[in-house]
Length: 241
Image (cartoon, rainbow, N blue to C red):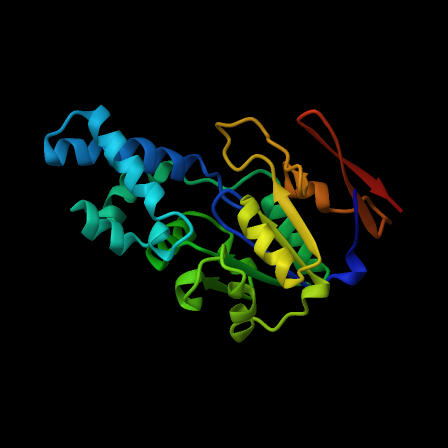
């Protein structure tokens, strides 16, 4: 259980894919669309393409290559940004995100988008969604030089964002990133339990989970929220005065 007193928070750091935006787009793109295009391009069976590509993708997890579109274009012999445009209709903002961003702005919070995403991915998604203008700034791990899975990331981030870890909230759908942020000392760590609309919510057993960001907005005349108790796979949020 965690109490969130909004008077004690100055800075909010938010991930993009799976946190603000529906990860269904990314899952479909990398697990379905790219293998189909690679299979056709190299004239190999789709099953073989999936096996080879999935193994290749896993080999680059927790590195900057994982989200580097130029790397994957070179490695796969495909125009990855162009392929993303073929399925861009799947890019969507999670329910409750815009209301939460408005709440943060209304209460004078410093609001930063902090993502592992490549600049070309950012260009596509920020053109397709309305989230960008709400932020004080956007920082990519490719600018920082380290992925968020590396604990040093949060220290290096201070070159771009001046923030006090003890008065900061981080919203993430990836537990590994929450773990490194915790090691660095970020106080409020919020796990997004439903990164993809195609998946059922899955609560973290290590961090407080929410399904929608509106669950963090206090009730009228309230100054805090209490999160969360878990019963099985359910996450509960209780408002408190």
